[in-house]
Length: 125
Image (cartoon, rainbow, N blue to C red; front, side, top):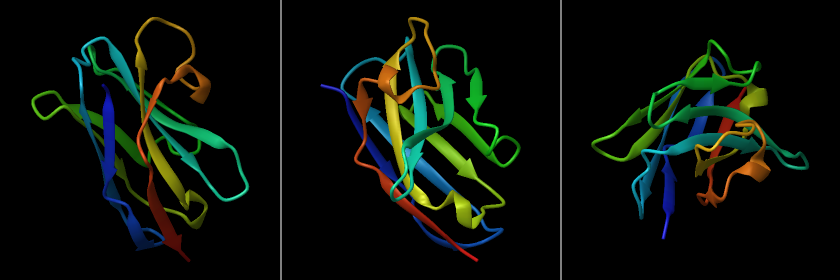
């Protein structure tokens, strides 16, 4: 059974950095896409970034492009989200997710079948 466990959230001042980790287990992820989504109180769950495990190709939401970097460590079966130049509007619960790499949009949360428990990121002004 696929398990995704996030870590690395916390409280940071605006302009600061955090690195989120997502440890994946339960199967081989070579043909998977790993995604990061976030959800602020009272809002929908929004796409942040994704990476294709096989090629390392990355995809970003416009709101984070240039500030966030998604990467993966094959040996550790772990995906990272490096977040720099954080803004108060980045405050949310961040979720790691996984789906098969079979095509279709990487940007829709409904296309992902596996989810972690989420980690809180709070950016103070």
